Image (cartoon, rainbow, N blue to C red; front, side):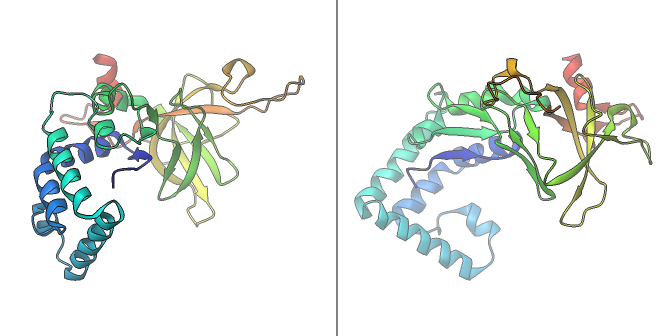
Length: 262
């Protein structure tokens, strides 16, 4: 499809993986488009056993080809993808493959910031790279991006009841928890959630940083012009996953320790 609007993968390693898949299999992708089927795709043939699904994929590919111009589009698009993917040292492969993209999005805060240069190379100068728009998981929807210019989120306490465990207490079996009104800027916490779906005090394993509280100086969202009291709304960023530890001799080195050392 030549005219997608956004390229979004929640976590940075997954984002990078998808781009590398395109680069690795670009020749097969081109052959699939030019032949209008997935017989030339080793990725599809080796990973999909369902014959009906393969037929459905072929049908969908043919529908797209017809929608965008038939055989003329088919050959032009196949050659274009092959040509652009071979430019391995040229920035902006995503923008070049899909010039209509408005933005690319993935989590770029916390320890994921180490990947930002590589992500920017894939986007190039013309494609904005912004933090993932929502803080969400299969367990629920927890927050929304405060601004496209930051990696901070507003938590949404109306959809989830939040509790927080201090970073230094996360390895305790029964750690003390804090309410959203008790967390403080400059500290990290593991998120604990109770949801409408039935999770009770579920430890997410996400370590977040409380970066501050919403204020008029932030200019993140429109606030009343009248001098009204602003609720104590914390801003958070995703720091790392609690389980991401190096533990060769019991030293419990977290991603953040490695980042600080670097």
